[in-house]
Image (tube, rainbow, N blue to C red; front, side, top):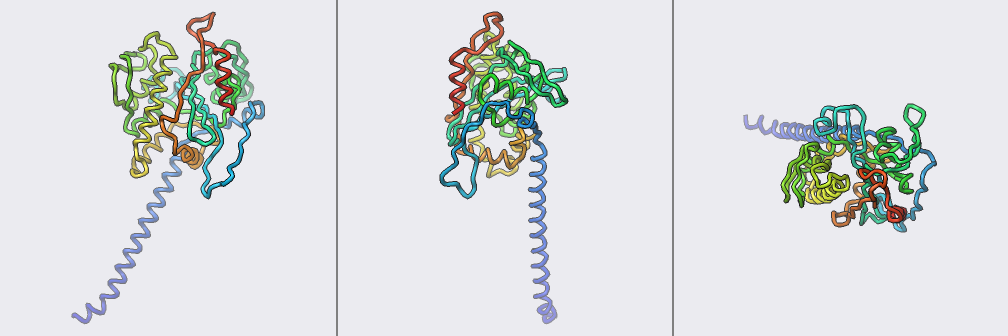
Length: 346
């Protein structure tokens, strides 16, 4: 009996090693399959619009980029970039309506920010354009053919409502003289999901907020907000003194800084589950131009911003004054606005 066990021992051990090896290979294959599925899923989340193809060459010139003298083995994007970031007041979709998007079809650009990244990616400037700004809206091509009409003294956010992302970009470029290198749009539900995936965000308000339209009620002080509450803060207007869009923009700037601080404080690389949740939320309701419509392109942009902290981000509002003929609307304050946009062309 002992002899037979001794003779079978090496074979048993071999079979055991083969089984362990097969299990390891299987686990690796399953892991690779899961990673591949995650990448495919996140990549498929992103919607895109061909801004470049729609607008052609009738745009502000691209700034000249000087190549790096010593390119790295794993290069990341360099050179100044201007990105139009829109928060869309989406009217389609039950979840967006529950978050305050309204009941009718269509959408508006509820929030518009021009994000300027310095060439070395160590600083950024975020400039908000009030949606109540009266502008000369250019004619924009429509996906179905034809074009939107030109309009003088039109509200800025009508560009998106009439012509979508392409018209939003063309109108911003017409107003600012600054070429938008990229376009990123996030809708209501996507923003709320992203904040929740990050574990909420901490903000401090100097005044009480009681806004029936944004469904937000906060006493003055510091609060940790979930996604729905953070979205309410971004939309709050009528619960503020004067009910102005400019007061809402100030809250949005506080929220931008708070989100950057929350992202910096969240060690996503050590928590794959949280990292996937954040990535899924970030891409789930995202629309970009075709230059950023893949996970690899977004990750490359993100890596280039790895050293950027909240204190490195300057937030501004386009200089405006009340329109002389309509005190509920604003117009660009010149030459201040022109000087600001000129600084972003460098």
